[in-house]
Length: 291
Figure (cartoon, rainbow, N blue to C red):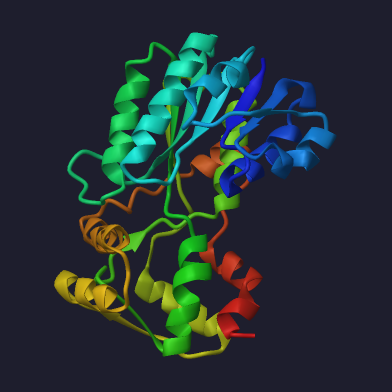
């Protein structure tokens, strides 16, 4: 079984590669990236590192040659990533790949107002029509986003302002998602399955500020405002239209319950429980404390 990870220089993919190499021989691992030099440590460990670019479909047949199972990590460029995913799926099918494991999103449901969801749903359609075996890993909300990006400036201001109105989500460590992905890649029996890969608890951003205040030793309040008010604040701060729309629609989606699926998939797949957000906060205590 030859296992490939596409987009392998990204954070989730790199972490998955490390876990995968603990489970299978490096001879069975292919890492595909636009930046081959960035994966020198994996090449030194014996994995095959190949050039492949979703925006250059002609580069993909050689990248996928001899691969049986492929991890397709969702890309980030809204709108354009459907074309990139299509290029990868078509090339994988042509190369004889038998199974694709796709990193989808916990909110990928028809009717969800999040602006990131349509790309995932369209990718699902492409995968379902590909004739390949497919496994969906619906990743929960990465805990790294609030812990390292949202909370530090909020703590500095003394308040976190959003539009989630105390709605909750199952925030998950990116590393736990990587461990779960590696477990699926390294074993059989996951064809046709969908896993919700979440953290162990449902938390709102009000809960996150309370946790962060306790760990950082710095007070931080929480304020939920109407959607139009948050949009106006983000516009005044110079946030680009697409990013602003993504942020506001996330809050709307969370309020509608799309972030609430809670599962034990991390423990079932990896043999260890998913870690709470507080563990990640402890790891980033200095960042939260402004040190």
